[in-house]
Length: 95
Image (cartoon, rainbow, N blue to C red; front, side):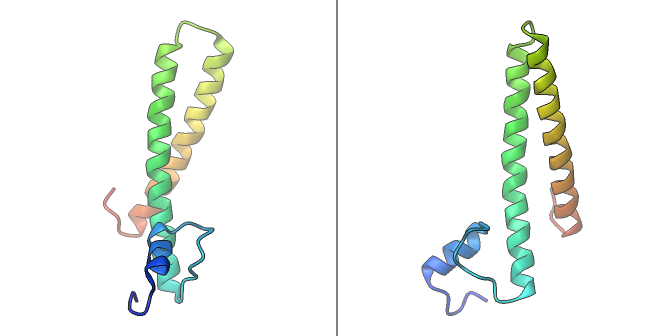
C-alpha cells in the first residue's frame, strides 16, 4: 500500500485528516483512515472532558448557569467518547 507514495502522500495518509490531499485508493485504506481519525478524535475528546472536569471543580462554588452549561458539555463529550470507543472496539482496537 505504501509503495509508490511520496512522503507528502504518506504524511497525508497517516494524518487521516478529512481535508488531506491524499485520496485513498481502496476501501480498506478508507476504513484505516476513518479508524485513525476516530482514534485522534477520541483522544481530543478525552482531554476536553478532563479539562471540563477540572474547570468544573475549580468553579464549583460559582454560578449555577455555568455549572449547567458545563454539565451539558460534559454529557455531550461523554456520548461522543462512548460512540468512538464502540466504533474502534468493533474495528478491533484495544481501547
